[in-house]
Image (cartoon, rainbow, N blue to C red; front, top):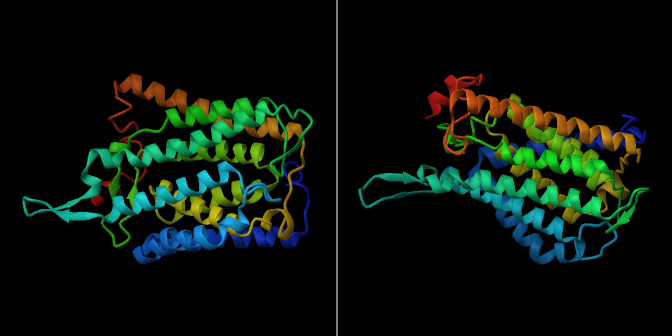
Length: 320
C-alpha cells in the first residue's frame, strides 16, 4: 500500500490483522450475549473512566488522545451501544396486561439515526477545523501530524451528504433470534460503502498516521460482519467496534505511534484522491436516492426508500 502508507515492517501488518479479527471477535461477543454487551460497554468503560483514562488520556498528552474530540467520540460511541442494547432488550408489562417493547415506540426509533448523525457531524466539524488550521505544508497539531487542503472541504461535504441520505429508520426491526439484533433494512450496501469511503477519508485527513487502524481496520471490522455474518445490522456492528477501538486507544495511546506504527505517505495527492472518491460516492448515493424519492413520491422522513430492492426482503419479513 505504498501509495497511501509507508512500507512498514511486515510484523506491523500482522498486528493490523490481529486488531481486525480481535475487533470482530469482541463485537460478536457483545452481540450474541447480553451480559457480555453490558460488561464491555458499561462496566469496563466505567472502571476505565475512574481509574485509567484520567492518566492515559489526560489533556495535552504526547499521543494526542487527551483532546475534546477523543473524549466526546468515546462517550457518544458508548451511548450508541447502550442505547441499542436498550432498544433490543428493554420491555415491560403495560396497564393492558400485555408485554411492550421499547422498539415499538416511534420516538425510540429516532435514536439510532440521531446518534449516527451526531457521530458523522462530529467528524465533519473536525475536517473543517483541520482546514482552518491552514497547515498547507503539513504540521503537528495536538501531537498528531496533519495537513490542511481542499480535501478537508470535499470530505466535509461528503459527510453532510451522508447525513442527509440516512433514511428508513421507522423500518428498524429487532430480529427474533436470541441475539435480538437491531436490523435497519434501508441501510443498504450503497449507503454503507459511501459511509466507509467518507469515514476512511476523514481518518486519513484528520488522524493520518493512525488511519490504518482507526480507518481501514475499524471499518472492515464492521463491514465484514454486515455482509457475511449478520446482514442489516451495520449500525450495531459499527457502534460496538468503534467503542471497542476507542476504549483501547484511550487506554493504550502509544499503540499506533510507538508499538505498531503504520504511517501515511504524507502525499497531498493521496489526500486529494481519497477525499475525491468519498465525495463522488456520496454524491452518487444522494442523486440515486433523490431520483427514487421523486419517482415513487416517497417521504424520506417516514418511508423506507429502498423497500423492494433489498436482497434479503424475505428474511426481513420473517423477523417482523
